[in-house]
Length: 542
Image (cartoon, rainbow, N blue to C red; front, top):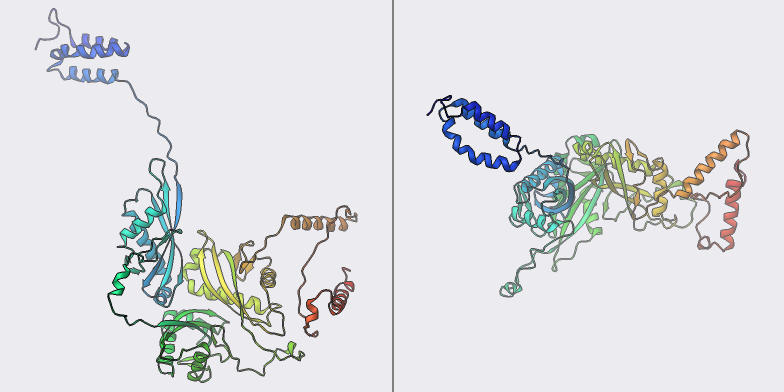
């Protein structure tokens, strides 16, 4: 290596200065300079400072590339309702520890999709609702969300269906749960797994011995002792005990040949001491044995419980038994005092059931889930108290909470079945009348006991009403008129609109005659004139 400073040779510093000068040249000159660098390698060999200088100069010569990072936006989510039937564990076991099963099913679904081929777009699954299919099975619905990325094809319901199908071994197992392999739906998409069974297989075998069809009956009764609080505090034990008592009752009865099984379905609080219990009891339909009907089952239960007084250790209300809608009251002589003036004998027809649906916004759904059994009983009690304290209490029978389902993270929909007695001497309660009673007793659908309601959420069957805008305007105008009157000013008379109100009540001193159905009849016109005069023309608002 030649030493720096020898005659005719360039020093390291000189070369550095040349590169520094070249740094100001255009890119084309920089390229030519880089090609000439090889000629100066001997100059830098053996000199650490020279090598360092060389790399520093290269770094200086390289163009600086700045990248602007695009802000990451949260992708939109696509939600799918994933519905399937769990056949094991059975519904009573599922219901007894619902909170545990809710979290376990959610974890299983999240694990399934996180470990699948669509895990990149998967967001989360949440448990939505469950309901009984039959004595052993449970329908489960969950909401699973997937991210919509512009760079990845959108996940469709068919793909979600097939991923679930493949990860559950053809819809047979979800973790510890055994599934009905023909029960999967993703939104409304379904592929039947049973249509591929060749019909020819059936023709090759002799006629199999078929299991008889089952007839299910809802057996409902009221337990007076032990008290409701005691049953709730140990609900799983009482659930099993009641089911065992019912199974023993029918297995030792005259209809044991056709009896299949009884399972506990639900219970609700009647008052602080009593509980309404509903069980589903199944009977076989065999052609060689006379079919069991609801009246026969009723009488067997009645005879084997000492006239509906005791079911094992449980003390029963002896006027509380219903088989589906069949009921025989032992208190035949007990009459509603207000109706004793009616000469026509009172007969019970088929009870009328209404689905009452509303949304609870407080307490939140998470709080309700922590003790869903108790909250279900409590909501049922509030509904029973509401109608028992209303103007239609004479025909009211009972309300049972049927289901709870989440609307969003905070709110949930409640559906209850409320039954009314159908007396021939009293006009039947219709859905509009019932809606109005609920509305009035809950302060315009705002509060049901401790529960805060969404005031536009009430449905009675399919009947629903919203406050029209014109009605709101009329109400505001009436408020203005009242304020003007209080100030001594005249209320405006132009374009006044009459307000109409439906006023409903029961008259017990006027027998209900067919002529009252015809608003052109003399009886109808006479009665309406007298009622209007008595109620309004002699009042302070006449």
